[in-house]
Amino acid sequence: MQKQKKGVLFVFSGPSGVGKGTLNAKLFAEFGDQMAFSVSATTRAPREGEVDGKHYFFIEKQDFENRIANNDFLEYAQFAGNFYGTPKSYVMSLLEQGKNVLLEIEVQGAMQVMERMPECVSIFVLPPSFEELEKRLRGRGTETEEKILARLETARGELAYAERYRYQIVNGGDLEAAYQELRSVYLKETQQV
Ligand code: 5GP
Image (tube, rainbow, N blue to C red; front, side, top):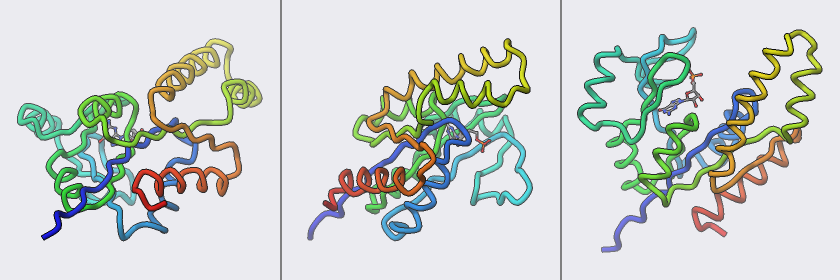
């Protein structure tokens, strides 16, 4: 009997508001039968409309720490005061079943996955340029110079991480063009072209 082909693990990051959720939703709409989204655990409170077990597994900090101790996470990180982690056994079993699994995680966690599973396909979604970002930030004209500089520093840090991803996709306003790029990465990495 032929062995089931293993799925491909995709790691997806990008600053908020860059459109990565929309891009992923489009990918899922087209290839949903071959794919699965991982459901993370988090200690943050659910937002309105979020469903436990669907958007996240909402758990207590103590429970999260126990799971860290049990080595239950493929990666975990702290973000804005809360913990977020990817359940390892769930992701591994989906990959074994041949599903292509998509992780939408922040950069610290993504670095851990790249180190542990170097075969993963990492994708970073970017705004068109640093200058463009600076222009947008300054264009608002509502923030102090100090705040603008702090934001630019954060953005610079993110862009430095972006280079460590296998692919960078620029979402410069033309969503369809960015999606076509993502789509060809997906097809290539899942060997469908
Ligand atoms: P939010 O609280 O807005 O849902 O997510 C905050 C950030 O945490 C986002 O960048 C999101 O992609 C990231 N995130 C969600 N789940 C995980 C996870 O399991 N691990 C890591 N490292 N980041 C995650």
